[in-house]
Each structure stands twice: as structure tokens, then as C-alpha cells.
Image (cartoon, rainbow, N blue to C red; front, side, top):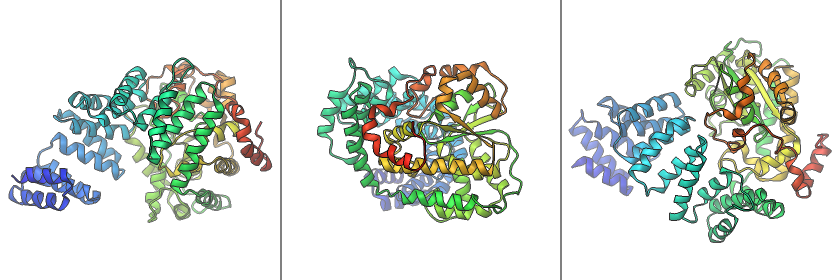
Length: 521
């Protein structure tokens, strides 16, 4: 049977054989979706996603099936066609899938769309169907953690470690799931796992897990030792050079630093819906996002790539990186209204509650404030500012997505200090060019005067007072950042001045920042 032959060939990795059998099936039975689906899957496995999508769409047109829709949704996500992907995934779920892989694929698509609550059901069904599949269980554990089901997440992670004691992803996930104590921590188990680890990725995650848990229990010297070893090795792996980011900052300053900016006075899209929460990561952006999204008129849309992708797409530059100097320069003559419309179209796929306003909390949008100011003149922008040394320290100690170009600087202490200095300089430029457009909100000020600063925040965003914003920790919306545990507790000053416990190790960065004229105390 041709369908069996094609599926067997796909499982073996015999892509030419799979394509041959699938093509024969499509020719023999042109009204049957199976041949088109399998031909599309062979193309996708060969890396030809653009060619695969029309084939899967042809399969769906011949009679929608859950498996076909789920795989179509997965490929659409890879092409950043988020709206279509979400519709396909939800339609697949409505067709009551029969296999674990389809359930897991639907869950992964919804998670990529930041619908972590929606991902719980398909991930749970995948695990129920194949309880020994550790990948499916990991996905369910992660979604459980994002949605505040901490005990459930911990249970799933421990189940995985029983079967795979060296699973570095799980060791790290457990470490950041909650604060460890002297009485209850995983340090001995992590030390054993580190001794057995061999791959660079495993060593990176386990060292980060050890650094976090040792910090929790007050062993700061050992914590920093593991952290610096992890970061040094990873910087070598990714071959990062600060010049990569310096070029981007230079291009932005060249484009927006003079007067006039080309097409600067052209009219953008006048939608007042977006509220951008920006800043260096780990400075309180998640906290402010939770405060704002606790308001009756505001929905949290997540860390959207909508503005970077809108600028990249309309600029038409060939580079694979979303943000680079070439793309910044090419964006000079873009029609602001087109950028605003492209942004809103992408952002719409991440909104579900029907509120009049939404937050976009991609920290790196501070690079795009000039584009935002022109393209969305009625959008509000809030930039979190935190003590420079706490900012440097919190970035250096956080394991961001390993391949994210946004945060490649964070694996070197001095690179992180340099990045902070350029961020600080860029924020000063935005303030000169658009005075008052960006509310620069102090994290320490918010902690010291929660109600006063929350009122100032809401006023800047054009929102009426809502008492619920003071009870942000009761907000049940999912959180997919390292701040998940913190923002489910009332506001506190525990994170203020954390760098001082590592003052000796951080002194080179502190001295350098002071030499740049940046106040660090």
C-alpha cells in the first residue's frame, strides 16, 4: 500500500522514497488527502517548508483531518504566519485527534502563540496516550509551570528524572520553578549530574541550575563559579562579539539621531490599542505587564515579535537576522502607516479577550521606539529602569534562549555592561527626540511606592484607575518568563540590591560603568 510505504519511508528518514510513494498515491487517488499530506511532510523534512505548506493545504481541502491540520499549523508557525497557524491548530483540536503526536503538535503551536492555558489540554492528552514519552511530558510540565500549576509541573519533572537522571533541561526547569531552601534543594543531585554531563548544552544548563540553587541557599562564591564557567563556555560556542550589537546601536542612532528623519512626519496608524513594555530584560518588565494586564481594559499579548517582524518584512533585507544594521538602515524610508498596520495585523493573532488595549512586553522593543513613535503615534510606551548593577547582574545570571540574538551579550560580564551603556544612551536619544513619549519607570520606585507609581503608570497609558492593578499577584494569566514565581507574590524589595552579594566579582563592570559616567550606587 502506497500510504504505508510513504509513512515507513518517512520514519526511516528515506525522504526520496517517501516522496516517490506519496506522489504515486496522489496521482492514483487525487481526491484522497493522504498523498498530498505525505508529499508535504517529505518536503518539510527535507527543509522545504515553503513548498510543503501548499501541499498540506491541498490535503486539508480534500477533507480536514486533525493530523493534517496540526502539521500544517506547525509549518505555518515556522513561517511566522501565526494567525493561520492558530486557526489550524484549534480546528485540529476540535476534530478530536486520535494520536499522541497530533495532540503534542497542537500543544506546541498554541504554546508558541503564548496560549499556554490552551496548550494544557492537548499536552495532557498526549501524555495520557503515551505516558512514557518524556518529550510529551516535558511539554506538559513546562505548560503547567507557566500556568501556575507548580506542584503538577514539579511532579512531571521528577517523573522524567526517574527515567532520565541526566536530563539537563529538566534539572534547570526544576531549579527555576521555585526558590530553594537549605532544607530542600537539589544541589547534591545537580553536582552528580554535572559530573556525568558531556555535551555543551547539558553542561550549560546544569551549571546554570547549580548557580541558581546555590544562590538560593546563600553559597554565592560557588554560585558565581558555576555561572562564570557556564557563560565563558557558551560565549565561545556562539562566537559572540560585542561589535555585532554595537553596529545595530550605531545604525539606530544614525537613523534617528539627526533631523529630520526621512518620512518622520508621515502619518502612522492611529490605533491607541498597544502598550509597549520595554527595557533591558530582568528589570521588572513582567511585573509591569502583570500590573497593566490586571486592568479591566487590558490584555497581555505576550512578548511579541510583531514589530521586529513588521520592520524586517517591509524593509525587504535578505539577511537571516531579524534585526541588524542593514535592516535598520533600509527601514528609513518605510511608510509609517504600513509599519503600524503590519504590526497590528501580527499582534491581533495573540489577542483573545476582546479588550480595547493590549500589552506587548518584548523587552528588546526599546530598539524600535523610533519606529513605534512614527508608526503608532497613539501607542503608549513604558520603559523599565533598574539600578545599573542590578540590571547587569540579573542579565548575566539569566539563561536566555540559547540561540537568541537579542541576548547574546549576556554571557560575558563586560559585554553586559557595554550593552547596558548603549541601552542607556539610546533611551536618552529617544527622550530627546520624543520628549515625554516614553515613561521611564523606576523598578525601585515602583517597589517603594506601589500605588503612587501604579497611578502614574496608568495615567501615562491613558487608563482609568483600577484597584485590581494593586493585586497583580492574583492575576491568573500564564507567565512564560523566569519571573513567573516572583509575579505571583505581592510586590516586595527582595530583588533590590542583589548585586551587592557578588560585589567583588562584579567590580570590573561597576568600575567600567562609573568611568562612563553612569551612576551605579
